[in-house]
Image 1 (cartoon, rainbow, N blue to C red):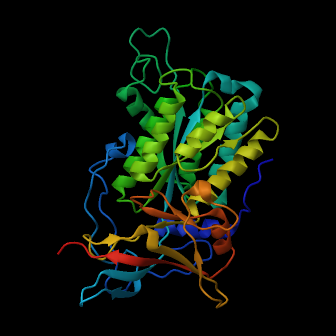
Image 2: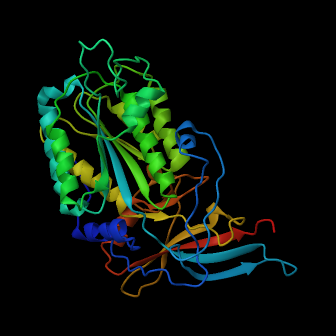
Length: 408
């Protein structure tokens, strides 16, 4: 059995509020609407387009303007010599980021064996109806697309029927969800997702690279279209090694890596019986999530459901928007950012230390950036996240230890 993190109703109510009403909350946090004078504004586009996120191209976009809806400045100060402020400081209220998930499910022919397809359907059906998941958005895509072998001119689709190399047109097809994104709090949307599973049966090859490329491009565009005010992740579910398109593991890993570097998109890899653990772990590592969830036969349906719950808990519960400086020309020293936790019982404020990434999280907890050089989100490690979640009324703030003045 998979050892999943305890699941509490507290996660549901607050993540749902964050998604549907924009309330700033996490776990037991008590966060208030931003009414302060002089706030951090929400960011503008951080690149010139979504393509850069998945190709690795760097570009600079516009910063958001100050105003209501950003993170409140609790206090600020500056230090310097000769009357010149060299380094300002500020404290911002932690603002939870709503989450949407692009789920890319392998329905290749091998999924029919060992009851894998039925187990996947069962687990996802339960997850879509899980009350604690109601606050997230879900888009769904199966791969590969089926095609008629007797058709002399099959259309471009998410398969290798027309283009065995699976070029841009095939990837663009894989990018289109069969069920577009919508909140699981909407019963009609949950039923659409369940009906989509029931409408499919396994067949076809395993075009992993095209499926992952399409999924991460969708997620990157979603992030950019929401000006980084919402988070999108990819959940890739497969039972085997790639058999078509680009089967080079290094190339597949780079797809996840570029989405993480360019847009902060996390890729969670779920390997069913038949998949290679080293291959799946490499995808997860490149996608910023450490290691894959490996589901073997036996209690497969329950183990997969537990994995989906843990993925949601890791992604939703403790991801915060990276505050922007009051002046878009100013620069935040990323090494001097602290995440502070104040318990609800009036105890002393404590600091979560910064770690290099999700892979570096341990029993001591801490926080990490989605992108270490150009972060858009601040994420708590599981140990710190759990500490906050169980403390009803706890508060989290983000201390910016050094805001360097930009050119006048």
